Length: 69
Image (tube, rainbow, N blue to C red):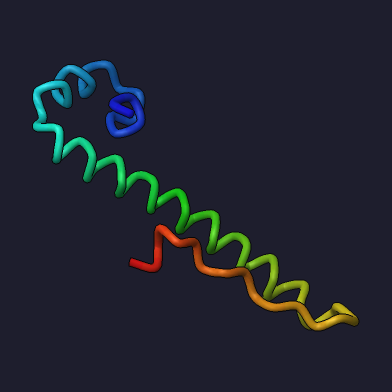
């Protein structure tokens, strides 16, 4: 978890070890949300490019639960 928040920067890992647990968890939650947002945007782009050319109507991808709140 710390490596992900530090973006694999060894110097930053040492700094993050000093953070309170709440700040670390909030930073990790933001990291997870950013990844989910990127994935959702990519799925939406693929869907929007393919949907007009498909014979069977498809629904757009659902918004991930982590992005709903």
